Image 1 (cartoon, one colour):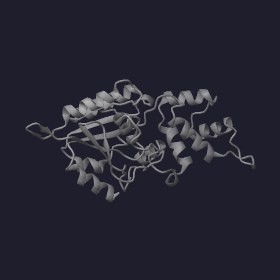
Image 2: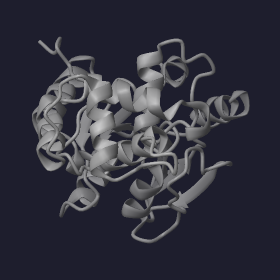
Image 3: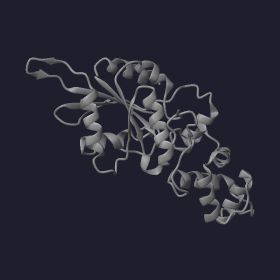
Image 4: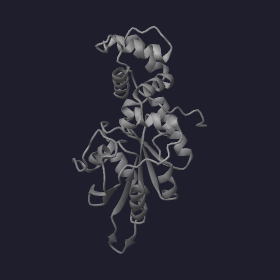
Length: 268
């Protein structure tokens, strides 16, 4: 992590503007406090990314929240027409660049975000080609990559970084649910039970109806989910480990409706 932080520090001086990618499903949990300390007063645009699978009413609350803190915020969806133009226009509008007679330096954009937040898909959208490899793995980008967007703009892609001490277990679990922390370091059954505790009621209602579950207790729901999916060991015991993985995957993919893991109760 220290290497990634040093990369950001060193390249921050070379760039004109920061593009910070947050997951619209968990805007608070996917915001790294360490990079916030480094960026300080640098001009910044926040993208609330993956908005197509997040609850729009909650996204709007978060947009207002970050705008009240003085940020420019864009609700981003790579499938939405005009998205590329909207982001580029905002970069050109806000970036401060040197002008010497007829020469105008290129806009250099530092793009940051936690692992698997969707930086590569944004880079590919802006460049109009597959400049960055997209992988469904946390921490896929290992080194800085410089990507030409057009004749005016270059992107500096930083490796995704997490903070060493994820003392707040609720944040750690939310990041794991969204596949931003490697699965090996999290207990899947514990994670599924936590998800069932915090799951938005609309999502939970869809889950219960889909699998004809009539329980409210999280463990009972998980057990009945395993039964409905016929996830049973040879000894006729429920395979809660496998059930947990499938439940989290289906939730992440939006099988139970639009998602929100961070609710903002203090926007105004």
